[in-house]
Image (cartoon, rainbow, N blue to C red; front, side, top):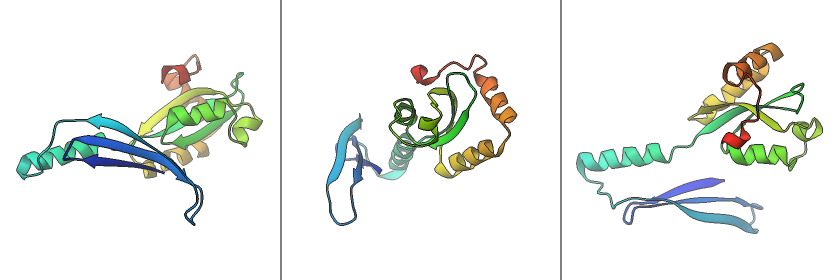
Length: 153
């Protein structure tokens, strides 16, 4: 769960991320962090409309569709996330049980950026539905050496 709260009075954007452990008021694991400071903004007239538009575009989320492989490039995995660095780290450190842990998927070889989750999920499904050859062509189009892109993020 993630929220961005923008306080226009003092020009501070605050990001809340965390997880609720249950639906019955159980323990919370929330983390607040200031993500931006800007001069005070007026919400009146055209300047206000422009300020709000600027803020909304600044805090818009990005989503990533990615392809990972094992060390020998024999197994491919396609995924989608809103936090690429965190998600790839989870795969590399085998923090999540599943396909990537079972088949030792540790190398990020392709990723694409989308601005809304619906298109990201559609793109993930499109790539998954394609043949292995199409996935290989997609990786080769941006990463002919199949190097690990994680360190470049």
